[in-house]
Length: 351
Image (cartoon, rainbow, N blue to C red; front, side):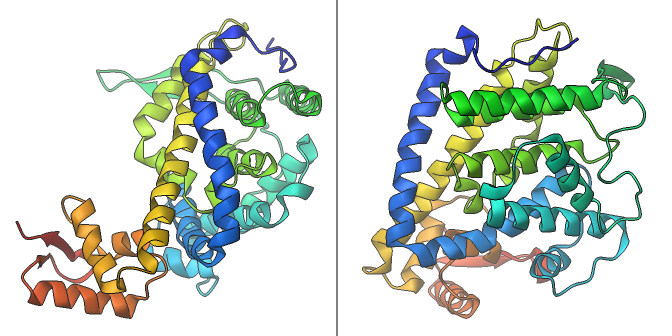
């Protein structure tokens, strides 16, 4: 049976590379507080972009998707969800909003996690929302021959309630001791949650919501402004490989969690670096360069096809009308060319 003990973490958690990741993240955490004081309106613009990205990416990882236009409408609550995929997207939207707004008041207990899962499934017709799994599940892999095999067997349905009680109690105790960085404990908690796999459905999405919740509670709120879920989606293969490497021997307490912890800390650091780049560009350019020049700069910083959505993400404080005007000017000057048409249209730098 799996034992949970975060009061004393093994030495492997303090390898030089993990310590370096934590130190860099803490440095960015301090800068984020300064950005919030100096450029709150820019952070608000980034938050709107990140929310759409997070909701879309976390669901796409699980094969749940809709069009970009309807996703925007669902996030803004101007579109009613149609079909199972959009119902599940709406549930993720609701829980993520609750976490961003009320994270300090959301305790880490089994009952709270059940309530969050209930809300995740609230728009669907499923009856298992807010209940632990009622049958054993398995993590299935596919070998080189294309055959499915059981890669990992999570905690049984019978043992799940007790496992979740012990997991939450262990986490709360470790936080109260204040011996280790709360971000390190958060990633350990999320990993163990994934190994328990406590629900019939929605475990992956719940794990990412819990990641954001625990980060917010610890003061690491970068996920508000740069989507942690999108970065995981962009590195999905590495995510699953790190999870597989970390879970071998989990039930016998012989596993090594550090591949998953290291991967997730890398994701958090990437998010902070992304935020720093965006804040640095906006802060340094806003008073010196015109908005049209800042749109042009996007093509100097990036290679390949660039869409309007890419520019919006790089320059969240610039309106669509200004972006379109700047793009037309760049085309007229022969600096960029338009490729594709309609929703598939994009722009490339003319060499």
